[in-house]
Picture 1 (cartoon, rainbow, N blue to C red):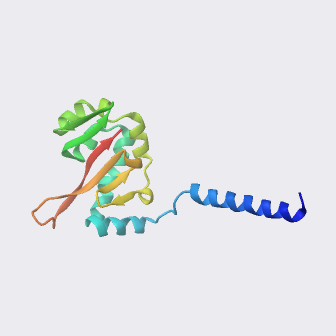
Picture 2: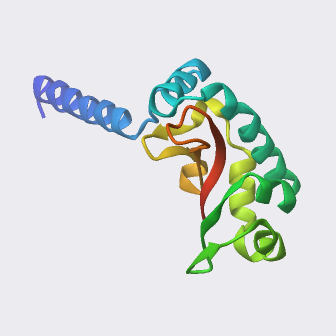
Picture 3: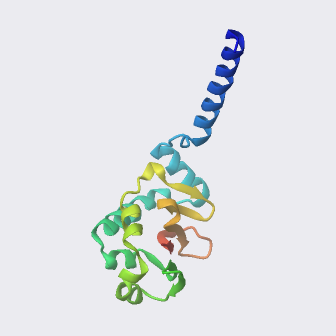
Length: 154
């Protein structure tokens, strides 16, 4: 192979490697401020999200079924064990916690960082969709709301 063809082939190979690295690299990290702004823009009440988020990640770390149950909106849809469950109240959730929230889900949510949250019009996604939280309206015009778990997906 001539020197020129080798350089051209090497350049194409380097370009391909660079392109693949760009495609496979993670998305640009976002700041906590950007996450906060996105929550506020899409759902409002972003300031009130931090407490339930912190409580949920700690409760998942501790396996605290009662705290997690108190953070949920009922009926709560839980996907677990290849089944879909509509949990009607906190006591049902607590009584069946180990079957409803797998250890892998608990660990993933416990490690969730605020600046890695995904926010869209459906709510705030934790741990790649293992848990969704949403702003739940407390009055007719949604001027008052609270944050709650709206779905769990194991």
